[in-house]
Image 1 (cartoon, rainbow, N blue to C red):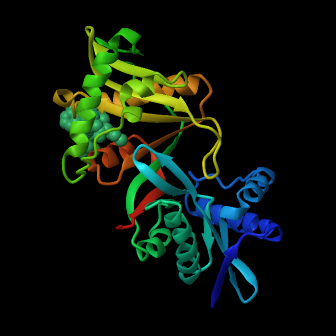
Image 2: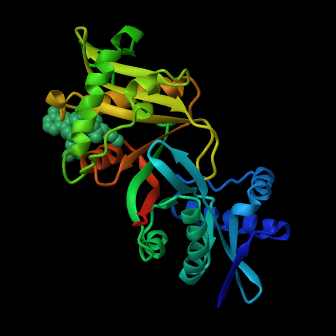
Length: 305
Ligand SMILES: CC(C)(COP(=O)(O)OP(=O)(O)OC[C@H]1O[C@@H](n2cnc3c(N)ncnc32)[C@H](O)[C@@H]1OP(=O)(O)O)[C@@H](O)C(=O)NCCC(=O)NCCS
């Protein structure tokens, strides 16, 4: 029998230990997952979030925890569980934890629940039994072994210019159109805050374009990631990778990504991360072929109100 209650200060050490064990296990099975935890910082974070962290107790022993950040944006309110936000020794502990935490999220208006789990079947199944489905995959690539071929003659990789934002919007529309196609069927229109121009306005974001004779054929954006548990330090995140639809399957996507990664490696990045929708099968093949190793999968459940 599992009993669930809120985290108490005396529980913090046990939760830190469980998360360390869990990341060590995940990293042993997939070395692209970083097992190193700054325990002092994690300890502090748990204390600060104490009122929102649930723990599972079986026969007097703490056997799991669950914490979801409830956040609101223009799409609504959602609960977000990171790779360090959950631990459990057996599915019945997760069932009991989610029953309590999920209710608290719903009471706070969060009907959409997101959870990062290691990209393994055994990590997914207990959540799948609770109605969660795979949405996104996170891929990681070390930047130590890059050997990009020289750019083919006529192609140029350069930063996009401010006066070219209309070009970025056109290519972004190509990306949206591709996302709407089956089996992806991502029909949800982007919010203004998610638009390419809002992204390019962020001073931390670099915009890269691949051009030939003044014509932009492909683009992507990149930005440094803050340290996070499960990831390594010095990570650059790539997103919005798109090749104009009439010039796909000619190797341009591969060239763009390799050149951008080499540029970031030269500036000190040691790893790159990317997220893709699991239903975007072209992206799935593309990122794996480009050397990105799946580490975590993000699961989603929407509560039918
Ligand atoms: C994903 C995407 C960026 C790939 O760009 P691309 O330029 O087509 O990529 P590449 O040409 O390097 O590789 C794609 C495929 O073409 C193949 N290919 C490359 N050169 C080729 C050639 N000369 N002849 C035939 N096939 C070729 C590759 O082997 C690869 O095959 P695979 O998918 O079966 O593994 C592009 O499809 C795209 O813009 N999609 C829409 C936006 C999107 O989904 N972006 C990803 C978001 S996470």
